[in-house]
Length: 291
Image (tube, rainbow, N blue to C red; front, top):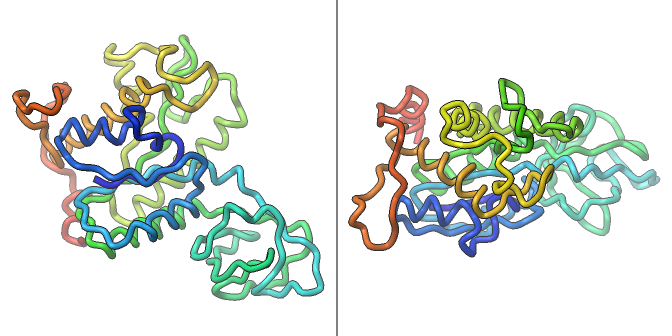
């Protein structure tokens, strides 16, 4: 099993959901996630990991992209294809950015100048904002993993923020008391889902799955042990296992990708599934055919 992402997936010393999921199914795993990574840096991590011979890949990235918003610096050297920017250290060659709704790929970065694969229809002026194109980068990562013949690729959506004891997810993403974060996370989840749909791979909706756990009474709303501190989207080790690891494992069982080994297996004690196994959905079958 391969794992790519940022701080929500990194820290593999029994604190990440990655080894937890791998142990539940007695699988070997490699974790390339790193705290602070943008989808550009995740793309670079995937390239660095090649060649790949793994069967499963889990991709949970894009959470940090909105923190990277460089601007074009006014310069007489700026052209439609090459221009100087500030705050560019989190961008990467091969990454995809958005400039005034135009989606373009970075071909080269040198001495503060970014050169694009194709020119823009205009010359960016000083102050022009640059955004990381989340959905396009995630789709490019999936395409790269497919080129390495990874059999099953899963895109994860941003996890549930279990902050409030009285307010529960009911449709749109809820991050109680943090309106700006709620706004940003809704866009992130949309981008993650759109990328999975565009590439024909499964999307694991961690908000819906964990909300279902609360509705069923298997988890408690506002459980203070699940986050590092109130209002912080980072999960504690217990939170990573309960809110991401266990939910991903349940989803894999329910969709019949993997079954837990017998309880007699010596290396671990698997969590019993509370949902019956069922046939894979049409999207899964389509994905197998395309693979």
